[in-house]
Length: 141
Image 1 (spheres, rainbow, N blue to C red):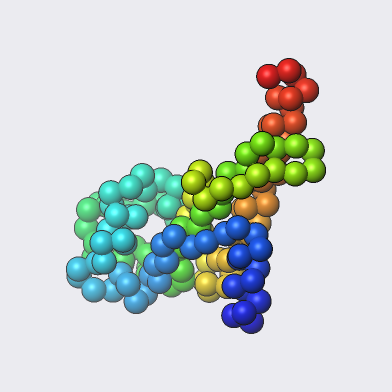
Image 2 (tube, rainbow, N blue to C red):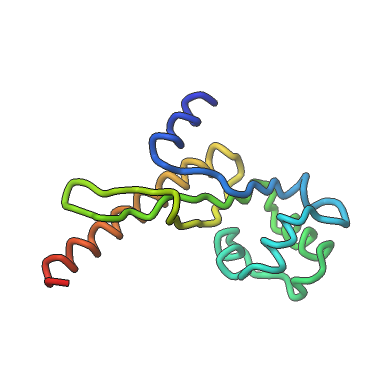
């Protein structure tokens, strides 16, 4: 299973940039920097939208945020995935480079489920970029 997941992620140009296991990383009063940045310093709206619950009323209170997550039975993984942005898109091909990539937060109960959701996101992302590029080329842009 693990080898298959590693191969799947590699073949689909996906990587995990940040992995937050909610019940083990956020239970203490002093959160790791990566969790504090995700929940309190970066734009929190996409993160809470992905988790699927409303934000707590005080985003600066780590204890309140953890309590809010556990009250809503959110005990899974919050993972920020990255994938290269397709460039030089043709009908049946494109070029990828890790010098230019997009990221998305994904929440799931297991890490494997998060990876599966990431694959779906990546495919939708590439398909959308391809449609936009083909439309632009037809319009002469």
